[in-house]
Length: 190
Image 1 (cartoon, one colour):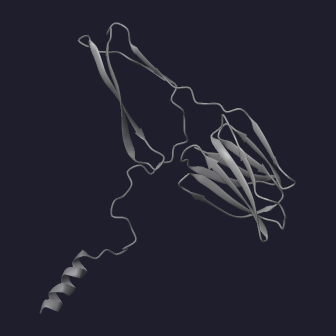
Image 2 (image 1 turned 90 degrees about the horizontal axis):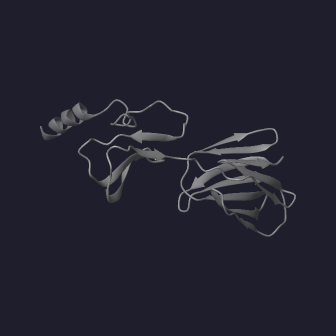
Image 3 (image 1 turned 135 degrees about the vertical axis):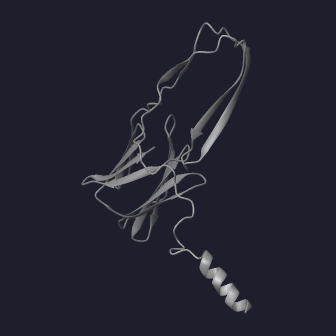
């Protein structure tokens, strides 16, 4: 009797597809990024001391988070508060790696100019980096190049049997898209 009751309870709570998530994502529309420029905030007439500002934002993983900034200063409600944001424009960087490839970095885009075939790519989290493997028999010592004033902090190229590996280290976690072109590989990050 107990086995029959256990079978019935299991059958009642079973799902048709056990791999389907129980919680459905709320936002299923992918929006291309449009950067925030500026906004004007009118304070109410009874505002005298601005205690703090709370920024609610969506992280790269999709989580909703918040950051509080303590102010504790007197304000004049007659004058609005202005919040502005200017996205960073990074200068163009050109890196040559022997006779293997040339890398161009500008405004959160990376182009690797090479005729070598990309055989695999993946990312690692701590620290955030993208790993690209290109097919080619080559013989060289590991190359490391450090960058300043860029979202790319370091590029390391290492020799392996039958391929070489390019590791691109970033200043933070990013979402990225890799596109193969006739002249190489294009990486766009957000």
